[in-house]
Length: 301
Image (cartoon, rainbow, N blue to C red; front, side, top):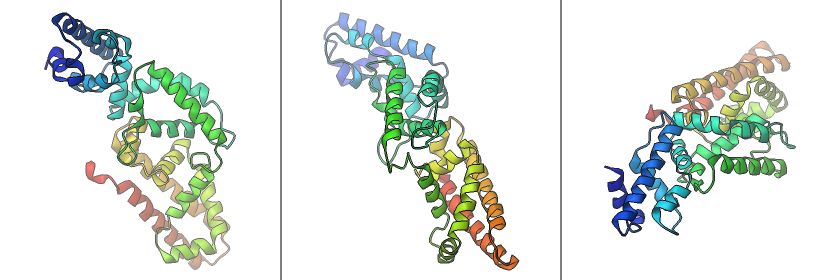
């Protein structure tokens, strides 16, 4: 459909073009907006119909329609819409747009010890993930000012909130890592007994293993185990194929498992037979737990 046909088929827009002159001006303004978005964000795939449908309810109701179209940040709205739909090129443009601002805001750990990389991933999760039936938060961007400014305000609020909060999951990474450790046991009573009996050793070994992971590996495990994100969600956050995010998760799990096993073997003062039994059980439960996490959205491959 032409831009004019799309305008006339949308009730919010059609009602505002009461004569031919206003219609012509609105069509010209819409075509200019869509052209600007395509030029500014090369490679981003969005239909004119989707862009206009996203734009229409965000236009100011005051004044002529063409003036409302010219006043709004339509190119940024198009980018936000594409990001919400998981367009990898759009997310790459978004990251380039806000990289310097986020680096400045998240330049150091918070007073609660949350490191900058974790803060960025928390923010990305809020922008692009869809918890439950709620749409990605980036769709809340109204286009009334630059997207970069909206992100900067959101990032500053996240930073201040992370500094202030006491028991929040985003501010207490040791609690989140403990959640990962506890999730490994599942409902297995024997594992629960071993975890309780050797808890000090196990916790220390697990902590060492988590500390040996890269920042990205830790984030991946926290986001999947604690926050419930799938490999598909992570592919959107990191702007990679789902197969890549899943491969990263497999690698992180394997290293966590191997390093926990090695560290625990060094700590425990038990017989060789008992040590092997403990390690096999731990390995089995970690394997099952992580496979459950990695396989939860396997049907969409």
